[in-house]
Image (cartoon, rainbow, N blue to C red; front, side, top):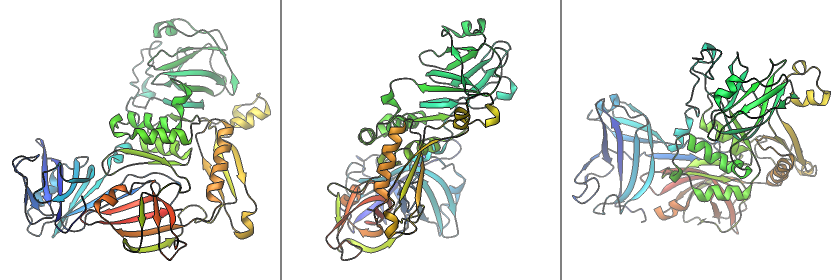
Length: 516
């Protein structure tokens, strides 16, 4: 369905009046009532929507090609010169649903309408003339703390694995993928028991000040772990299928205790794509709302082992941003509520849309907000194999000097460079990326890829277009778009990657951020 002069907006707004959850219906038409066979049937939509509705989605920080993903957001303005909506501002709208559709009067609702946004409301404000509703896409669900399990602090020592008062209310740890030198939680000081994850995990090593301890036989039960101590200088694990994962020391630690831990399953489950999916599922995103094709494509792009250690109140967004950055990827929630992901690469393949001066209303070339403002880089450094707990050299006295220096560093590092870039670009920058990649060869491959990507002269365009709904539906982040215009090197047509999108709800207009 293409947008037309007769097409209207229909908006459904969930709210809670203090007694029950309900739905309001508003439109930008002078009048719109659903038919008796529509869903919902025979409902009058209030003619309140003003012509200022907009939403924005960025796969990466605005005008950047690397950085953190952000929740998409928007705004809907409703006419209120008569004060008829004054009471709305006291109702509960935060986190309540918003669904925006566009269609023709007389068409079956909602089956014959185009759904252009599904998300949640954030807040409602009002002035003398209007009410403004801000909303966000479903990625806002990822802003909440990922861990919802907390220590009870109710050990009856010497028994218990919930800590005492000092641990009460603190979040439990969790491992995703492969994590090295994590700081386990000391959950039972009487029996020297530590916890590394509240879910199933494999403890591959325990260290005291960097010195590896000897593993004893695994425990068969919590009771066995509490009843029998390991030999001095040893540790024994209790990590049953389904979790949680603990170990017990045979003697009091002399220095800092750390552990190497793997999540359950095979290494194929520890890729960036699989970790993004696992974290999203733990955050409450339904599997049906995670784009399976994107997960597969990202796995194909980079299948290296990664690891993330949840050891505090980090949000799912924090965790996923760290994982995605490991392979130059990003994630976002599309307008229909599906979690999407892709890896930024030079544009290739057939474009989904070709834009000419017939569709382009305005176009500007801009510098990126990346370090170096988009100037080609001559060197890329990639940090890998994170130690989640670093130890100063004073904490590792007695260990080999090389080991002491290594334990003091949060990351190992590889690099890739091309000094010839500085011939043209005197101030060509060095770009540094923190990753959660575990293996040096994988980090080197990523460094080489990033250098190839960022040493080239690139163009970022901000383009405003006027296109039909069918074309707008093709404009998803990560898509390849062709621009043919006698400016900015696009005379013969040039391909770009779409990395930012602003859609004006009651028009066929959109602002595109293109890079290539």
